[in-house]
Length: 373
Image (cartoon, rainbow, N blue to C red; front, side):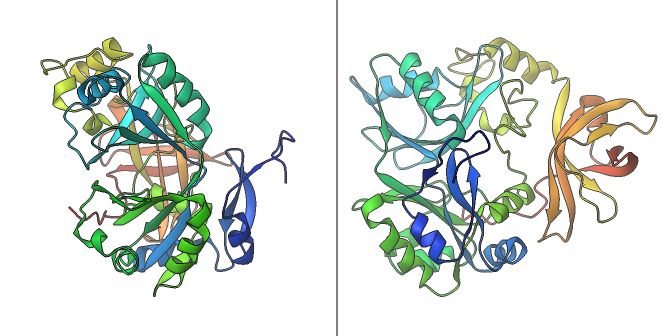
């Protein structure tokens, strides 16, 4: 299988397993990946919300950062690449991060973990080569080691703890954003669905056997890219290249929760990251536009690219992600809106097939999260 440009797709280590499970394989971020299984996207989505879904996310980039000096020196070097508190992250804890450019835009979003003697970083598949180059260039003296021999699985949903604890009993004691090592298996209590769950890094040689053991646990089903997208949309989570990109600042993206006090104006380590002038200014004064949740009236989804207008016809923004939310049984979307029109409850108009239909600015997430705090 090749992508739209004719390039040969990379195969996941679990490719044969996905084929055997009836996965419909499609190109995604340079890989051949299952978009759905025979049950279909709707059932897979609802199964994850009610039981447990197993996702293969081995296309993501896994990277180890090792210090040549002290661990604090490594943390500060990594912290200089983003507006996030790395120095204050305790051992065994994970945090969401954002690489920014000199213009204050987002190069990628990522997860990173303090493993005591090094940092473990997970970046987006489409950005991983650029991210690795960015880390090498931006952190001279730090050993940047891409991990190329491990699979990455995500087990998500209310049944995830019981299923994984059947194989790794210690996971039941973990809380949201904890990270633990079980022999050669690395487990983080996090995910991309809004549900409680885990991300599991495992040597590729043992990944298929481990995945089969998980699928044999009560209530666990394989889930594809289609449901992964509808689940993250209901959770109000950004998809890089769609809801955030190099032109979007973390403040515009409504990700200010990811910028800790230490990096803000007046904080212990204020600024010092790429794009700090713009980002700190927007934190103080507000951005020109904001990412917001959107609820279209009726049953027709408003998808990416739909233009948004004020009721007087003034263009005010655009939808960046949209579709039908199976759990909320309604169309949902998010997009960027001029700040003056971004108030909760504001009525806008989205242009769908030449008609302007009402859409209401609403809170996110659309589906309540169930993280184990």
